[in-house]
Length: 330
Image: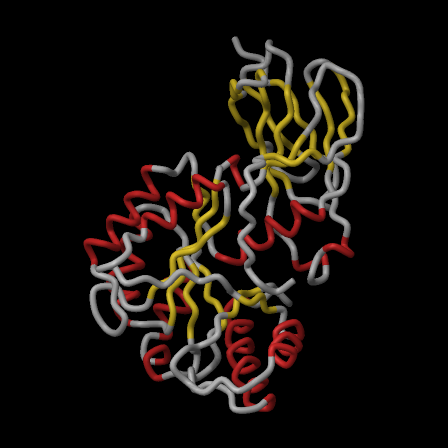
């Protein structure tokens, strides 16, 4: 799978547990990170200066992360290289592959060079070996390659095709409608843009600000993250094998998860997104911590849900056993 298919299903949790005895409930992985009902990826094409000037500061103020599909050898990108490669990356936005020059591809050789040159630049920026990245086909230029040719080059470069992209005319469509629909259907959707407050195919600053403020107001319902993070979460979630839970006492248990590598489109070493797990715990629990050897423990509050009191936390599949323990209060 290389596309960002949106799954319009209403089930919010998926059980992947083996049976075991009380006092803990059956662990389940939640549909989206943090228990969100929906996921939204904000996408920006062409590495525009108005994105640097108008979009990124507003995203950063609201602690929202986005995907920027860049052309790493275009003059507009090169003239602002430091901002894209240092400031934007440091703010934890994601740079996606949009080809090196946005000049299209008339054949497989041009396709390969345009994609691989951009991937080389992104590899230089991020380092640390192979990584999954998003790819968006550039519009308004010749694109004369087959789906099979594109699929081959993308897979070779560990790229995931962004599809079902929602570009919009703000005079006709309120972009918050994409968010509303995602919440209603319990799905992953996206909002795709070019210029912000200027340049081409521009979204006005008032409309853009309204969209961001709507996402903030619904932060408890919507996980806003770069495309590739949501893609990895969905792939890992759907490939998850039975969750192993071993009760150590009424106040502590060990838990571990792993994925069926045959169900991951790329090698399992490229999937590093934590999955959110929920386990029903005794009513006496109010706070708990999650730890594993060599790492500091993270602490959380127990949540009250219609099913009872639950411990909700996030762990990466295939990284060993985590210990979850009640924190004594008083």
